[in-house]
Image (cartoon, rainbow, N blue to C red; front, side, top):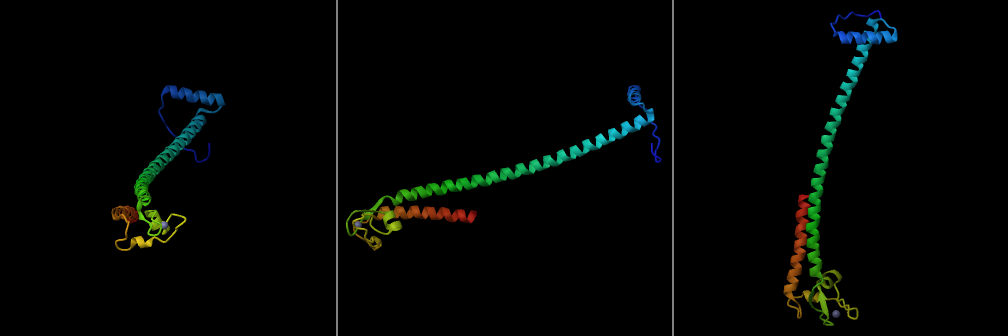
Length: 169
Ligand SMILES: [Zn+2]
């Protein structure tokens, strides 16, 4: 006991008093000293438990925040996936259109596709390889205007989706 010791009067159940007495006897201590030690240990445990509860509360709050963040990230990813799918199907439609015959080469009269006209700019017949931009002149002969308009539509669709997506991004 230190010089600053205080006295506590407390009424305790007989069983508790007997256990405290056993504790003191086992250690060969005076009952009052043993009780002071037991109260100190009990308070330390209470503080430890309180600290642990606070930590658990803190970790639970962090978990809730992390879950919220994860679900908003998942929602963002779903939006991006949907956009990618939409753009992919528009690109596929455009790729399909680009491979269809648009007309005949003015020079060798072999079939010319949208890819030949817009991507390569020349006849795909290696023996010819002529510039086929003249197919874009007003009313060229052997030119499928309907097919050309469908191709322009497919290009417009891809550009439209890309524009909408860039605005909403
Ligand atoms: Zn040609």
